[in-house]
Amino acid sequence: MNGPVLVTGPTGNVGRAVVRALLSEGVPVRAAVKSPERTVALLKEMDGEVMPVPLDFLRPETFRPALEGVRGVFLLRPPAIARMQETLNAFVDAAVTQGVKHVVFLSVDGAEKRAWIPHHAVEEHLKRSPLGWTLLRPTFFAQNLGDAYREDIRQDHRVYLPAARGRVAFVDVRDVGDLATRALLDTSLRNRAFTLTGPEAVTFDEVVVMLSEVLGRPIRYEPASVAGYVRHLHRRQLPWGQVGVQTLLHVGLRFGQAEQLDPTLANLLGRPTRTVRQYIEDHAPLWR
Image (cartoon, rainbow, N blue to C red; front, side):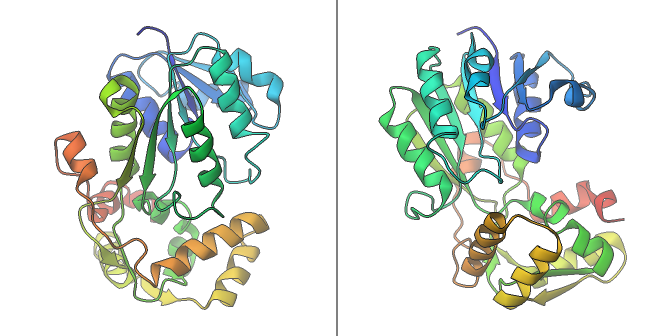
């Protein structure tokens, strides 16, 4: 099957990993961005054929031009978008009318059981559509350390979360990007859902020991109360919807919601997956 793959969120952690993996396979990429002229410089670092195209989930008139002629779509939900019916689900409907054959959707672990998560509505809509679909349900990303937790580590030398002593099977977005690319190219992975974890479950106490060793300065883990964490995110100026989802997901760590190990990702890739320590060692400049 010829034609480019449309990648949504191509300048974010997961999207970039998918773009790089597709290009390594010689697949041309159509990068869906709100403002193509502002992201051309970011995409120029990619070694391969990348064409930015306008796409805004709040502007349905951008759907069809972005989808025209693509072989498949890597779809992820922007955190600021909470209503799925008129945004991502409408985009899926447009993909059907444009003749797209396959959508790989970046969901979250447990979305099939938690209807309050926005990803649940997209999963169900894809299953009802005539499209081929693959659902990727990763646990917590190792990249959260360099993204959501970065300023706490850099400025306050701490990780501050309401996770108590829960263990987390961190997964690296580079491994997820490799699997997303395989799913877009391998028809045997269509109409299947995969839970994706890293190779080990660690506590945040163990994570800060790794950070301290790699960075050469002490980093501590400070368990947060729920109210304290909500105040903390509000001070970081996160939207209230994102504050609520992020708080619920981290509180769930207290009860083992992200500690289960699943060999699926390593089995499908045919190689060991990256550990959280590998991520920290590879990205140490982020926290310096």
